[in-house]
Length: 519
Image (cartoon, rainbow, N blue to C red; front, side, top):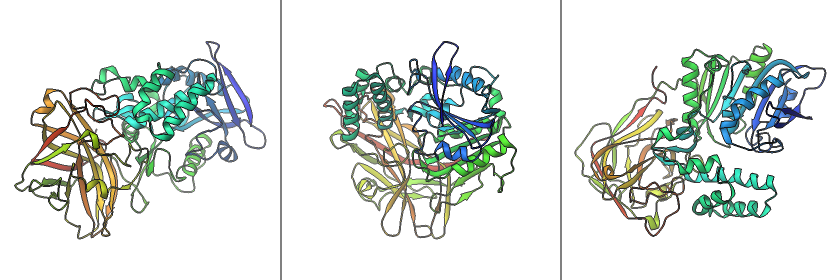
């Protein structure tokens, strides 16, 4: 292991750590560029760089500008295009590099390998994981709602590391305490204003997710889509739609794209990608044929953990109609998901901000993944609609989407959905969630509302049922709607209103659609 440094054209020095195989070089190289301190090297999800070095690669992990030991000011994604290009150019000039370079990394490290200032020094193969190009839809919000707890938590992590870098131990301690005791979901915005007022995370939380023109959508060189690419996503990861967008762009451009979506959250991959990634780079950087051919697209069935060769453009195609005698928020047996429409009464839900419905698990939870929500469904501020028990095993594959007419008595309300598996033993296993926010005078008019849920692939066993739960809050996954037409940017306050929402069921339907549309 050696320490390396690159002096950029503007004089800024970027620091890196290099691991090399035994014996004589040069070697094919792997690059990861990250903002969390290079010693970590993303070992929360990947094998240590020394493991990849034992596999025959020189591995360079670099602190991005303004982070770790690298000089300069950290400006977020906007700085990475030029620095990534300079780093690749510099690597190919080093005596330990044979000219072949692959990139890997997830989250921030995923997007940093997609941004370049020129096409002169692109990677020969790349493996972006759990990331996307659109800051609004792939990094900060969905359905018009900020990712509240996730967005604050990540922004405060960067702010605390900035305090540490600047020697502000008191600031670091204050942020850390807020994260540990959960107060950050109420106090996080004020902490960011104090400790990282120009940070990317705070900018996202201040920008209206209903205004796409106010957000950055990154672009990558068209030539990059022709390079071999391994894309990695998770059913319980908030960036999954970003990964699917990358897959759609690459496959549409004719690139040699591999896609793996596991039953994983953002930080828990269960050791599922290292050997695949090593085989991928051996094949494309060294010309080695893998012992087992690398299938283009494989998706994990969540129940069994088995991989299936499937396309995101496919789906199982079910469509259920919502039905109720009007008491779906009071009686679990009243609300139904039916294959055929039937006459139904309206369902009324009352949201009390004093006891706002909690969000749990899913892709937006700090406790991401499948969870039991039987206690949540027992509340009277959530309407539940359940299928009959399946008489045979049935696959559900694609992106669930609810279409429903709804109106509120206030100029603002949220629809927070969960699709769950009702087991024979009474457990209610939440599989997928989705949120949508409606603000302004139109919230008080009866209009058709659409809410998309996180994609999934699950085999529902005979004797089980599916349940759709509709609530009006998912705190702290999204901020609680104040009901006055404004975008919430704090915890619940005395000005938050009670909101009553009427769900009109005659034309309401839950459909399973393709995760990615046809070209």
